Length: 531
Image 1 (spheres, helix red, strand yellow):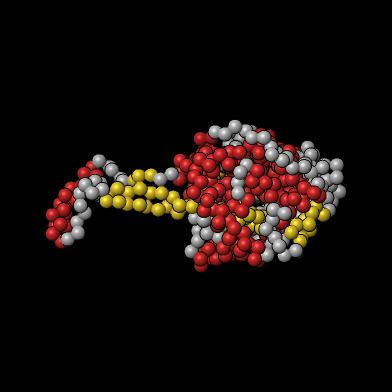
Image 2 (cartoon, rainbow, N blue to C red):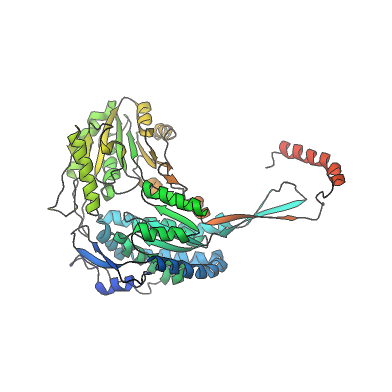
């Protein structure tokens, strides 16, 4: 393992006194975007609603050029081997850790998260670099496997990088999601063209800068920006493999495009995630866990719970404790703040939250906590909100809100809770809170989701970089992280060779002579349980 490296050029930290990043530093980051058309888009700071910077936008021609350059760089990167890629990615890990304060500042500036929740992202991106650096060789090295005819044929399986990955990431967890998708692609020997969401492009560019300073060829990881309908489409048109995180509607379009081109696609999509609160919990402790799980990043996380099913025996005590915890949460999106929650990230998120709340209350839902827009704190600030009496005719019953609103339902027992939790088109994440881990595991085994967290909201599975992460049903296809996350970027190739010890039959006479010995071989392998 390589020793920690010195920072080759530490970026200027965004000054908190002005609430914005250093203009020269931003200009340097902008130079790293593959963008030649001259168009820009104004990016607003969630905490203030004021302009943060003017982001250069790419053209479809820029995307094509980025892929061409990445393909040239990828050939040498793949040939460099596992050891070289490991050294570069471990240095990138060290630089991410060394530059954590600047990265935290950026996450807060672009997303409106609290400082602690921004630190989660830095931690996860560094962990992704480390895991993929160290795991790639063991997962992807060439292996000998049992052949169909031992002594006659020898078979090996090797893994060939697919080429250049098209990675499309959203604004809500820019460092975490980029790290999970990009570092696994690089460790597997691929190049990357990443479409960064405009709202979080600076985060992506600064993460890339750490990798470049660690020794990654600049053309190997290109960043493009722009509208999803044009630039996202261009990325999917050129990619050899696609990794997408975003809405289910967009994921379906990408899946169709990938199917037409016969290229693999890994899709992590929306969720309407359930939380089950069993009657053996400590109500106060469970309420604190539930509040963090539901309102971290103001609920703008694909794995955040939006539906809580609490068993009747503890429903009153849990609800009182939950309302109390929500009421005590401080909202402060300012960089460097010590708030419990930050802010919604933009006007579109605020509009959706308000629309879901207005629809629910107009149709009879009860607001147990929160429910108010707080422009006195920030233009997109909204109180963490808990609803009861939510019915199937309300938008927030089955549709993903993706921010601030959680619905609470009382159920008779754990069986009813499981049935209600599974009665969804989505299947991304679930949470089980219980005083008994064994009981919670039994409930978890019955849930139709890609991950389940016991006595934790999402960080257990989301932060377990060695374990696969993804969804079922309408929540996606494929998995990121762990061995599965590495294998999505490679083609498995079987190389079989004749040993020369025994000649395989080539004529009818030889087949007749070898038929009985081969049947004997089948029976012997069955008895010996040889695969």
